[in-house]
Length: 74
Image (cartoon, rainbow, N blue to C red):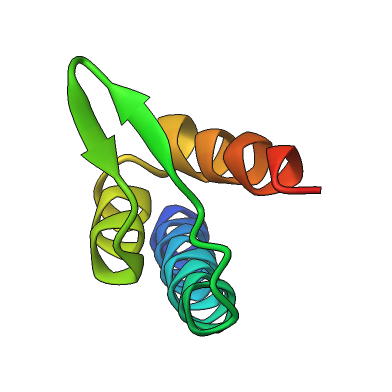
């Protein structure tokens, strides 16, 4: 019974760590004048806090999307 709880806690911690990393990385890039930006369904996602919240809520979709958009900057 403890193993599923531990696994869930590790997964939640991993998602939170990814979201914090995205926030910090996006803030650094924005200050450097190179914001990570993507247009999705007609909306532009380019704010660090928006990226972090999206990665927190939908990590399976938005963390890879962030990494791809980040790579396009060069």
